[in-house]
Amino acid sequence: MTIPVHHRARAAVALVLVLAACSRPSPELAQGPRAAPRWERTPVIFVPGINREVARLLRNSVFSLEPLTLRTDAETIAHLGDPRFAPDLKPLNGALPFDPDQLRKTAVRGMQGLVDFLTREEGYVRASPADPTDKEFPENAQAVRADRTHPGNLYVWYYDWRRDNVETACLLADLVESIRAATGARQVFLVGHSMGGIVIRYYVRHGGRDVLRGRDCPIGSGDRHARINRPGAEAVAGAVFLGVPHRGSAIAFRTLVSDFTLWRVVPVTLREPVFSMPSAWQLLPRGQTDGTVPLLVEAGGGGVRDIPLYTSRTWTEQRWIFTDWSDPARRVFLAAMLERAGAFQRSLDGPHPAEAKTPRLNVYSTCRPTFARAVLTPEGLRFVGRDDRDDPFYGRTYDPGDGVVTETSAELPAAPSLQTLLTCASHNGYHEDPGVIRDVVAFVSQPGR
Image (cartoon, rainbow, N blue to C red; front, side):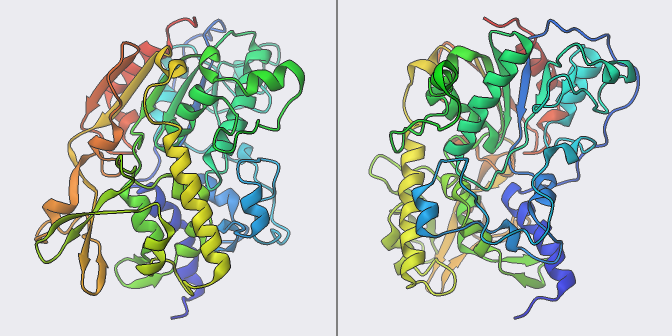
């Protein structure tokens, strides 16, 4: 089926909605009086998850999904984790390059309530990650925006969420060093929502170094290069996690293997761009000790089947790869993605001394039905919709969570350095919960170590 142009325009937005499982529009930016700036605050860096606002900057036209599709060739595989490698399948056809500054007046999805409270009530000053003295943001008072002598102490860091999470951690490590140098702060607080929290965890443990391949982040030189490639814990006063899929998400699996039906009427093939995104593979549900994942409910009453999800043979035999599943190039890329995803997830498994000494606040929800398993039928996979509560398989395919991340996936092992806060918020609604705002503000308002 050929999708009409106006449907493809909506499909470009739908891709991000599927990946982020967005449930409502971003809130309006808060207005009104603000507290006097408190320049001595330890800097806070917000790291969002997948969000549709950034998608507007990643695509060159509302009429095509092509700019969201990355390269999948051998050169791409060789350069996984290297932020210097050009990721696009084709030139941007005259489109403007990715420019996060275009989002200055856009609410930060899933985090704006916290940004507003910290700037309005606590005296934080938002600034540009590219230039900490650039404070031209609507959250700041006019007098503060005009000031070019003080660096800000609150930053929202947008990044290309399609790409490899180790690569993103490399860039985060470089950003932290830049903020520390510009502000004179010994440490920073990091606040991550959804996939942004996974990047933070990797950075705290391993810095920007690619431990999956045993090579350094290629950014910086001399002492700066050394700091970027050390565990980030020494530069982090504390980390906050909001609805983070620490053990992956079945929604990532569903997005990789099934097409999307817009308004339950128009079929839209989104697997092409999603297949090309390393981050999507790294969000797959974590394997058990034997590498299998309890992901499929057998329709015939056989219970839950454990599958070797990180074996490419499973994907090819089940024909989960779109188009020509026997294409050798596709199979090579598939094997590389599964191998790297498994290695990435293992890099976050078990206790780690750098993470153990870092104060952490883990916030997650336990009240909302969240997709966790697919139904295996003789005809193939079937996915029960979130609103299909009368479906006989609903109770076996949905677990408690925040609507995107299950409670089980969001949990972290107990540790003296870990605080846990349970809520009934939706995945994009943590920043609207007064209790969450209170606890997060108290956590990041502590002085750095």
